[in-house]
Length: 284
Image (cartoon, rainbow, N blue to C red; front, side, top):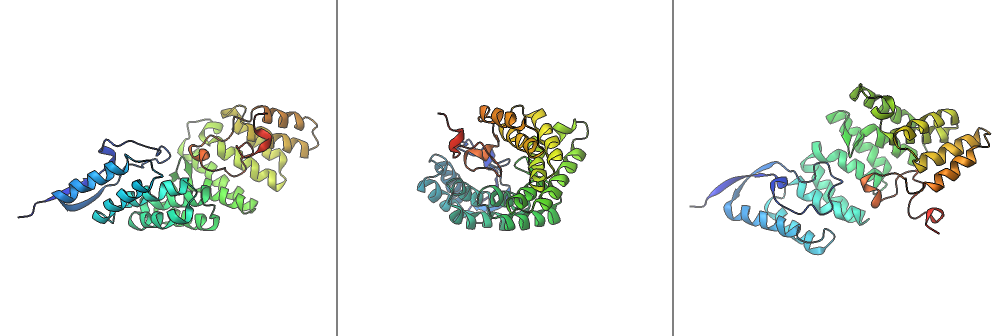
């Protein structure tokens, strides 16, 4: 008689190397309950262990995950694990079908993540907005990768030069955080990047005094934040203040203090002035 067991598929309980997955809030967790034979259960664990014994950008990593997926093709986590290294290698078209599979099997977990990847990685801004809007409708306003859905929608609109819409959603993000963290002072309740991008939106709209106020709030938390110093200086110059140049100079002196999100090692963030591709901020 064949023996069957229930496998509660929680990869986080396995003693795997974490590789390069710190950018995922719940990267190692998938709770799909499935009826498996003991043989399939053993093979599944072996394939996953072997996949994580290989570099995440290797062919072997992908092949072992493929073997695992033949046993549990409905595992959203495994599909996401196939997609993630391809996005980090800027192979967006290769990774997209796998991420779509993750969303198909667990939209409540991966829809907002997919929208984030389209915003920061593949720069597919309209689709990112569409997915965030769907996530808001189906699951309510939430957070992904440390920021509100409204924050990323604002970034998408910034990148499409729709600055009024960007400001609209960045203000929604600010108010959402004020409600979620009512006991924190404003500069801490609202993430310093929210303040920064709100300042950028106002800068692009010509609201330079409002922009300076937002940059100052960002700088209260992240002192010597070069990108905020730079745009603050430009805002001052636009207002006819000769000291704006001093702020821009200070920005370049602090060029190492740029946006410090985890994924900045893979992608340049919107309006990130001090990134490694900028020749003017490289060491002389």
